[in-house]
Length: 251
Ligand code: IPE
Ligand code: IPE
Ligand code: MG
Image (cartoon, rainbow, N blue to C red; front, side, top):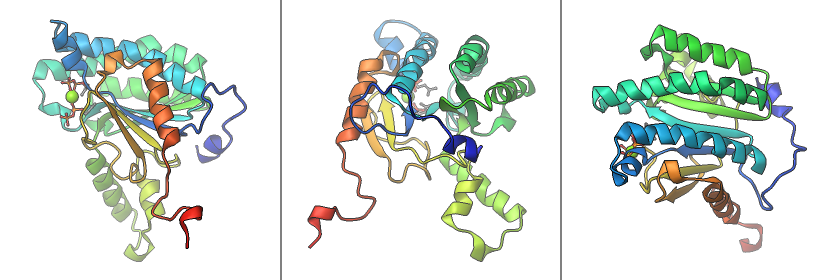
């Protein structure tokens, strides 16, 4: 996996003139409010949200983004009414059925970030098959955060480190990175949140430390290619210091 990522081809035409984030995380929020504003059911909003993914992933590829992590279902989303949870579980099933072949043909490598064990065995097998089919694709890595929580991910990493008998003094940040679902991938450079909230809601807690955060009031089903362009434009105007001081600001 790691060498594959390093080998990813970068000679494609890039449609954004500035600095493009290598890895974008997207908190796809606002489906319910989008539906309510139209007098529809929340599930209609989720359906429209799934429809929207295709154009955004395509645009990410066109702009030269290499990794996209989409937040589709959080560990806290189980608190929603049972019917809505069932619908969200069905929608991932449907998404794989409908989009897998097209994603594969476009060179997308699918990965799951999150705990599969609470999903039905049938859905687990389906996800695994999608991962296996697309394993060698190198155009874009799509991490689907499903039954994902940043804290749960860190707890799992710590448990696995202890289980593997790694001595405390050998545990470094690199060790923890290695035990996360995103092992081998660069940290997100930009986190986009649609729907206007100004919080991470347990998304990529460890990995987003130095990500730029962009929140837009636009609901996820309305977040289009142009909106993505604006988010990348925002990113490209940011100065990232990683705790340091800019060269021309040094005494
Ligand atoms: C995001 O939209 C989708 C999921 C959390 C699965 P919401 O369902 O949270 O929509 P709002 O925030 O209620 O509008
Ligand atoms: C975050 O949205 C989770 C996903 C987009 C999957 P939520 O709607 O669940 O977050 P809160 O409840 O507003 O923090
Ligand atoms: Mg929400």
